[in-house]
Length: 236
Image (cartoon, rainbow, N blue to C red; front, side):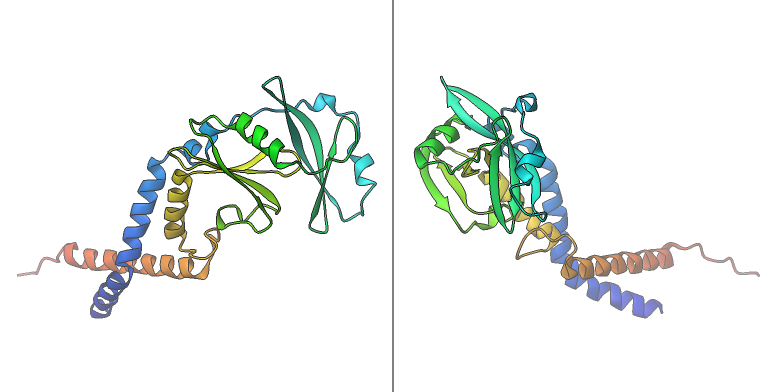
């Protein structure tokens, strides 16, 4: 039994050594990086709408859709006299389509133009760069795959290589992506061993490797106990 445990421990060590190093390294990097900066909160100016302005009941806008429709909440942004103003918005999701209604008038919101997106992105940006590129996306990149298309992508020429992803109707920044976030995401991928979607914490590869690491630890403890266990005194 002891010989088998030693062989198993050695083989598991050879197989797991790289991934164990990745776990320690990625955990250290993610612990060092401030999560607020990873999320880009220091680069985005946020403004909250007052829902006291809402005079239209949610049931009113839901009545325009099927019973399968889902209700969400957001806000529409406008820039007036260089001031960012937010108005409450109902978001109805039905059959993979989204419809937005102003909560203070009940009017449906249409899509914004590129010039509007330019001003709204600039008003929400707190960095030191300038807008370098604006693109309308119908297929989303990996870094915002959990959002719904379409979106406006706005890139800034700052040191963080900041990218805003804006709602096409409300102008609200849905996600901020920076070089710091992309570095964090890379190490997150190494940590959870999901090399495709970078989001599945329950993937079979991680479960199998974690189980093997546990077995490696247990066999190591067994060998350690065998080496340092108290020796019985012989009777003379």
